[in-house]
Every structure is written in C-alpha cells, then in structure tokens.
Image (cartoon, rainbow, N blue to C red):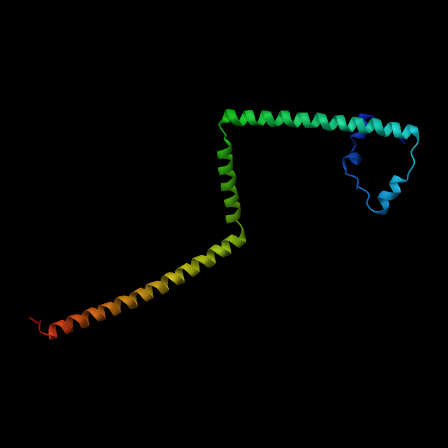
Length: 146
C-alpha cells in the first residue's frame, strides 16, 4: 500500500467520493486480508481523517458564531430574515409560468363571475322595480279603505 503526504493526498482524485461497496462487492472487500503494515497505515489514516473532521467542525462552528455576530451588529434579526426569505420565495413563485397561468385563469374566471353577478343583479333590480310599479299601480287604483 502506498503512503501519501498531505500535499499528495489533496489531489483532485482524492476529492471525488468513492462509491461504497454494496452486496457482493462489500463481501469481497471484507475478505481481503491486510498485512500488519497496511492495517497500521489505515489506522493512522483513519485517525488523521477523524482529526481533520473534528478540526473542520470546530472551524465551521467558529464561522457560524462569527456570522451570527455580524448579523447582530447589522441588526438582522431572525424575524427579518424570515420575512426576507418569505418575500423572496413569493417572488420566485410569482415568476414561475405555472403561477402566471393560474393567475391569468383566475383573473378571467373572476371577470366572468363578476359579469354574471352583475347580470343577475340587474335582473333582480328590474324585477323589484316591476313589483314596486305594480304595487304602486295597484294601490292607486284601489281606494283606501277607511
């Protein structure tokens, strides 16, 4: 097994994730026997990778604290961020073709419904006027009873 220095390890080949063996491939990797030297090398590499992960976790936590401090100094509150995220989300939705088509369809349906309601209203108004006129004619033609 080949040993790598830190500089050699950071090459692009090592940045690509290797597929995790499954099924028969996994069984085949388990049955591989490693020499004591290879096992020791892998243990050291495992320890080194675990330390790197721990360091990266600490760096990430420090960056997150720094980010929170900057936001606090700028007066960016969680509520303001939420409002901004919602607003951006609504803008993104409004920009989609589906939203535009739906909005257009609903607008047309609203216009048609409005026209239908207006027509019904006009018919009811005319009927009420007719009833009032007939009522007036009836009351005029009938003398008041005393």
